[in-house]
Length: 66
Image 1 (tube, rainbow, N blue to C red):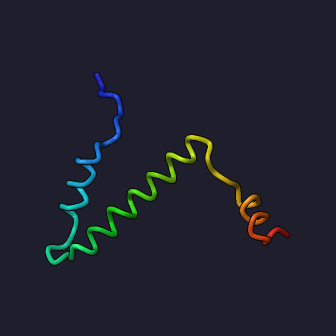
Image 2 (cartoon, rainbow, N blue to C red; image 1 turned 180 degrees about the vertical axis):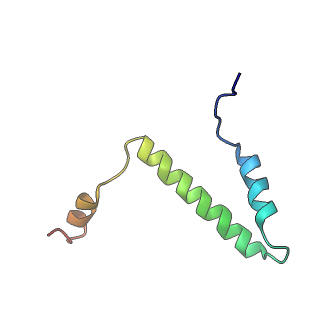
Image 3 (cartoon, one colour; image 1 turned 45 degrees about the horizontal axis):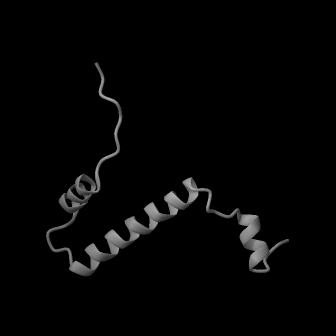
């Protein structure tokens, strides 16, 4: 019987990312990688929660509407 698909845990994702990094990676690069991943996940959670705006809404908000 096939196992249901599951999302890797944060720890599993971090291990996979760390294993893929070059040996001479700098801590600042690691910090940026983690911050970028966290920002993407936060954005995805906002979208799932319905807290997002269309391109048109953003354009109107910033005066770029055509």
